[in-house]
Image (cartoon, rainbow, N blue to C red; front, side, top):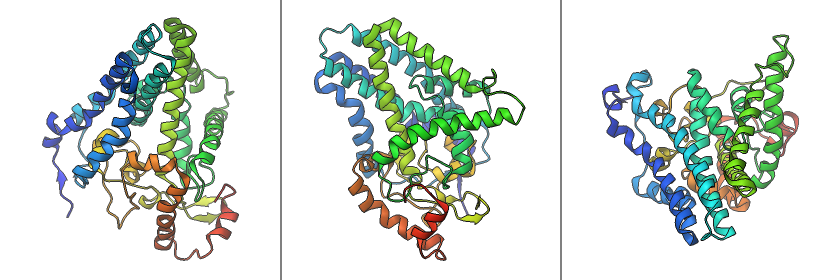
Length: 380
């Protein structure tokens, strides 16, 4: 019988404290900007390597919280995601003001500082926006929009909620990485397809109500206004240099997001039932990782199967799935995203796992090349 972490323990701020480690990345951004030189590497080194090392020391987190816990039990977890929004805003635009006027920094050091800012905005900021956009509270959804506007990727909300969760594991989901599709081929594809799929999803939603796409209720109107406001603020604070550095961090953040998207469902497909219908989403349609430190950093994003099962479930309540229930990555996201940047290494590690997954869950499909040719026109 499953033993849940009781709600009384969830209410204790000390249990939530490890998830607040993400806040330590913001001072590292400032250290890099103030001291320049190799110090600008601190944010990516901490995000990619320090937490990978911590995963090795701390091992796995297999305990589950009681999924019936209420928001009242999760105060310290909710405060984290909402507190991040103003902190990222102040850091980003404060950094623009400081760095554009910092004569002690070379051009490459300024770029490095904003590369680090982008790593933090993508790894933490977009991830927190993902948590916030799934909530029913309008205020939290607005905060998700603000975070996404800071990296010029506002359409991610529409694409994720209206397309990805509905079509994950099928050819209609651009974000599901196809078997043998390297990240460098995946990345330009999703940049184009996700924007179009998000816009078309919102346009179709309005059309069902008899409204044109340019109606004020189309969230793209809000997306464009927020993004323009962020870009204008960067230009007002730092001039052309400020605008360019703003674009640097936005580009890096988007790259970080899509790296995570790439690994979450790589090679996993839902069975086609005919007539354009697919089986329901199941736990085995997402890769999971139980590494403790990286789940602290990413607020349990690695418990991805349960997220697709209960999309509005807050992150401390996401459940861990055993190896017998859902596929497991060999390492946490910090290691796997680095591996994804090296396609031969990625295929060596992950392709055998995908083939074993196919045998385990779909033994009746003996010719996957023929199956994919019929059901999936994308790279296989």
